[in-house]
Structure formats: structure tokens, C-alpha cells
Length: 337
Image (cartoon, rainbow, N blue to C red):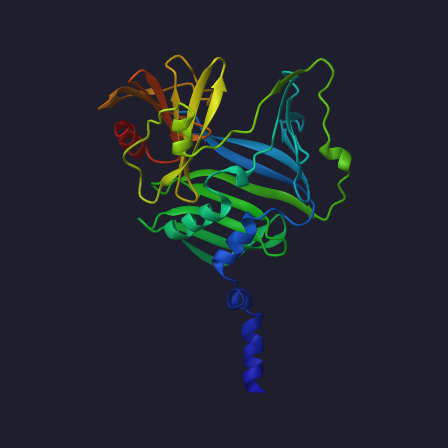
């Protein structure tokens, strides 16, 4: 009787039952990466670091979801107005900018078409990161598990994730730069599971008078396929620890083609763009600082997508983009043939 009473008292202590019943960290992580199984309506805040100084910029989003792949996302302005609308009906993705009365129509991104699929990414993540689980704070009024991902190479934190215990939805996330300083973050402020969502919410017709631009889903290629298609890849000979070549695709920029390479460690992605000299990428960056490279003069800046390093070499313009440090991007740049 005494032993039973002690166990009951311990179970009643905050955190004891939760820690004793905590599931495997990798199991919770895998479930959070899967597509949700029930509809929901939510509001969330996303904070990104932009500009050379990494100024924090916050945006509010309203999201509606219906299984298996119907999404309606609205980026909200300061007065609650919709400044951008994104609708996916499983076959088509519509992006509408009301201020510019412009619509982009294309196929929704499908990770299964990538050469580095979800299982490959998860295996890569398991190799490069340690994942710990603990009781998390309540997010949007819901109980969570807190996952902390640390790089095995140096023990630095890479991500902190708050996962809803009931639905396995990722409710809050914090990303860190290689030096441990905070980077981007996301947090749900309201969540309603099983909310009724009419199918009309996930239908979109371009408003009268708007301009419609069609874009195709990238055709992911392997290196040998790129060479067969007449593209001579210019890859870095050195990659940061844990990173491997994931895939490439060729994008049309006007009458020119841009080759986009991706390198991943399972969480982070570093992109390398190989462009004709006069082609410019719209990364939202404005100010830049000059950098001396062994392959010539370069420029670095910071965009919403991460740190940016650009340079010209061998008749091409190269642009590296990622959350990696400036020194890492510089070393990669200097190793490009």
C-alpha cells in the first residue's frame, strides 16, 4: 500500500509522468514530418532574419488544411489584410499577390520527386544530429514534446521543435546559426483541430484583370543526367562535414538557364546557383559587402533564405545561399572548379 501511494505521489509531481512516458525522440520527430491526418485551422507567426545586419522581420499567417494535401495560406498585413494568398488543391498551386494583381500558377512541391527523398533526408539527419526529447511548454494552449537537435560534429544546437502530443503537428520551431545564435523561428498562436473546412476554401480562380504567370515544378536531375542533357556541372570539391550532394535542377530565367544545386545534411540545405554572367537572382537582398576570394572578388549579404556569397569565375556567375557561416561558404566557393 505504501509503495503504491509513493508511486501515485511521484506520478502526480509535475514532469514525472511526462518524462516517464516520453516516447522515442526519433519517433516523435518522424511523426512531426509526416503530413497531418486531420483538418485544422490555425494562426501563426514567422520571424526571419533579413538584410546584411540580420534584422528580424515578423509575419503573421492564417492557415487552413484538409487531408491529404489541401492548403490555404494567407500572409497577413499589419491591419489583418491578406497581402499574399497561396492555395493548393493537390494538383495546382496558386500564389496571388493582390497589390500587384499577379497570379503564379504551378505544381505544388512534391518531395517524392526529389532525388534525395524524405527517407534519405531522415537517415541523413539521424547520422548528423543527436535528438533529445523533454516535456515542452504549452503552445497555442496545447501540450507539447520538446525536441532538441544538436550537431554531432560540434554539439551546437541546430533546431528546437515543439510537437503537439495529440496531433504530432509542429507547433513551434527555433533554428540556430552555426555559432549558436538564433536564426528563424515559427510559432502557432491559435490551433483548432477538426475544424470544418469547406472545399471552396481550396479552390482558386484568378480575379478578373490579374496577370497569370505559369511555372513548372523543377525537374530534379542526377549528375549523370545533367551531363547527358548538355549541362556541365561545376560543383565544389569541398563540403562541410555531414553534407552530401542532393540534387540539381535547371531553371529558366528569361532566355537563359540557371543550374541550381542542393547540398543537405538532413536538416540544413546549401544551394549553389550557376548562372550566366548577366542573370540576377531575386533573393530580396540589397546591401552587400566585398569579400576577397582566391578565385576573385566576391560579395556577401544576407537574405531571407540565409547567408549569400556571390562571385564570377570562368564565364559564370555563382551564388551560394544557406544558413552556413560566411567562412564555410567562402571555403566552398574557393573549391568550385
